[in-house]
Image (cartoon, rainbow, N blue to C red; front, side):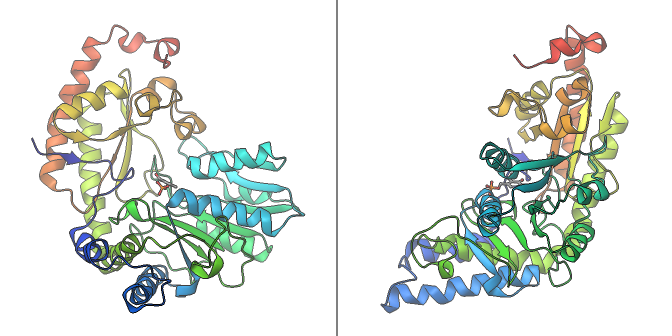
Length: 394
Ligand code: PLP
């Protein structure tokens, strides 16, 4: 049975071109770029070439890119750097729908005595930009707002927020982990101070990320040790993965416009058909302003986990907004922040596509899904009368 992989917001396949580019640096050229000898030292140039490619994708200067180990490290570094750089300020603004890499770090800072404003969203997961900007005080250290949400795909008004914060001289970080490689970003025109990205979301391997830090921004390293990354992130460089990330950025830049069109058409084909064929289903999020590859759908009166298990029998990989299967007892904080009813949260499924998905794969999902939903609803002892209590994870 072939796998139909529709969980690309969780992670993506390493592109064959990326793997080819990396392999020599795992197999043959294993030196340390900081070494004096040619065997290691020649790798320094390869790392710098990769940095140029990442910078090109974002429209920035190479020395504004710091390689990290992942998106989480980039997010943590940005926030930590902000609070270390402005020790007199004690307030942070973020949103309720951030990835845990930002959300939990902000909660950690709150336990250390910082005041954190978690700005809410509406039923469609949209942010009120004025509300976010009104949360900023004189002692705000940093505003951190994600560029697009990983669960529902909503895209936020980052250009507008960045411009307003620049005028007020407030540091602005955006978590663009789900955007880089999926949509064009030109940081020459977008005055964010720091931006996080992660390799494994754009067909590079896991374990490599980057943080963009605008020239002139105060910066304090999070990982302290050697002189790597010009003293901004210590630790021997993950050379092969850095080279892989460079290649992934080069590929993304080449094909971005066509990919956006391709993924939008494929996603809309899936979404339209499922909404039509499955009664009591709905889209979670802002249908008009979403990542091209993402749809989050709720099928009322069914458990998301049960849907995932049935899809899995057909080799179809997706993910659920009720996180009981993914090691957490809590249903999605994003859907809860949106006020999605419990019955709909528990039956929510995220499909996230990539350039490697085909129309045939999408048609297979369209073929099997209505039967799965109907069968599970018939099996359910609760059906439409299911109470909120009976839906809670135990
Ligand atoms: N931020 C967002 C929006 C994400 O979707 C993710 C991963 O799912 C991360 C941060 C964390 O990235 P990483 O897995 O590279 O640590």
